[in-house]
Every structure is written in structure tokens, then in C-alpha cells.
Amino acid sequence: VYLKLGKQLLEELNAAKGDVDRTKVLRESFVSFLTSIEKREQGQTVGSLMWVATTYEVFAENSRDDDTAREYRKKAVGAFEKIIERKRQDKKFTSEVVLVAVQMRLAQALRGCGDFDGAFQLLADILMKRPRRIDVQFEAATILQDWAAAEKNQKRFTEAIVGKTIKGKTNLVWGWAR
Image (cartoon, rainbow, N blue to C red; front, side):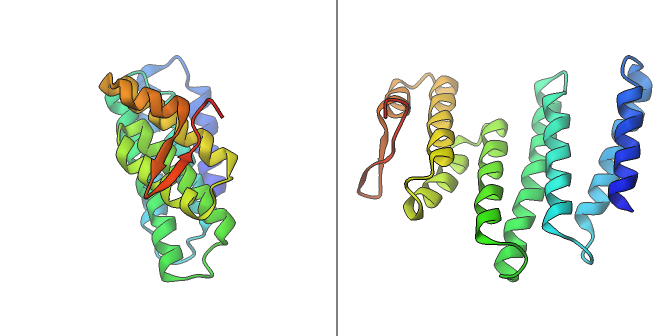
């Protein structure tokens, strides 16, 4: 029922493109709807929370200003964190494979919020267990690169290119050169 209603709201939102006032009202309604799904305790699935987080990310990508985009990304972060917390509470909530995918998406959302350290630490924890995950290596290098650009930090640029040692593990993050 919720996903069906969500699809209808999304269709209305897409149809309202160009009508700024109508789009704003529909977007606010959609955010209210997403918030109610996220706050539900019963019937919550990893799929419904992923849908909520992904929808917030889409809103962030389509926002016209950075502050609004950051607010939507923070909401996505909250939904991703809720999935991780539910997994901690109930090992059967989702699989380990899905959990790593959620952690990746969380790291991307954190990067979008400018929380490079939080994003990087999350991926470093994954790489400590799974150092050959190419997707995680790619995202870790991207985070280092974006972090370096944000801080104008040459050392981070170098780490993004040649890799980074973490907790004594040489080049745990491979960097772009590998």
C-alpha cells in the first residue's frame, strides 16, 4: 500500500515539473510520507527503508541548492543508519551482503553531506574484513579525492592516488593508481 501510494506521489511530482509551487507542495507531502514510513515500527523491511533512503537521495540530486540537497542526504543517512541498527538488533533482518551494500550507500550519503571522515571510517571497517572489494576500494578513493578537494589537502590527494595505510595494513585503500 505504501509503495503504491509512493509511486502515485512520484508520478504526480514528475507531472508537476515546471510548476514550482505545485512541485514544492508535492515534495513536502512526499517528505512527510517518507518520514511516516521511516518512523513505523511494524512491517518495516530493509526494502522499505532502502526505498525511503533512495528517494531522499533522488531528491538531493534534483535539488536546486546545496543546503536543500544536504538536508535530503541527511535524511537518507538516517534511513540507512536505521537499517544498520535494525540489523544489529535482529541478525535476521537482512543478510551480510545487503548490509555491506547499505554501508556503501551510507558512505556515499555521508560523503554527499561533507562527512568525509565518517564515510571513510565506514569503508575502512569494511576493507579491514574484505580488502578486495573493488566497489569499496573505488568509493574509498573517491572519498579521499573529494575530501582532498574540499580541504585543498595535497596529502589526501596523494592518498587518493597511491593508497592509504590503515591500522598498520599497508595500502589497505589501494587508491586510483592500482
